[in-house]
Picture 1 (cartoon, rainbow, N blue to C red):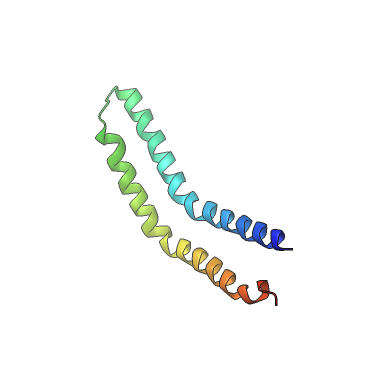
Picture 2: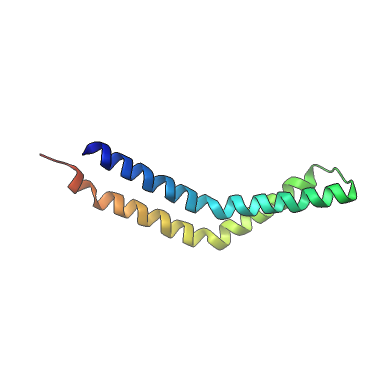
Length: 90
């Protein structure tokens, strides 16, 4: 019984991690892909051209999706803390 609870919590935690990180990682991936295509076509190999737009895009995505990510995380934490009394047996 304890194994099922632990595996269920771990499964839900992994899903929350994937859900929270997906917008940020997706935006960074798409930005990096577009910049690498631009660099390949123009043969411009400037290192700051890769990092600065990624940082800006990731910052904007965190600002836009931040409330949603915080809502998902607090919901998971609330559900976890509410379920603690049912996990403890005498």
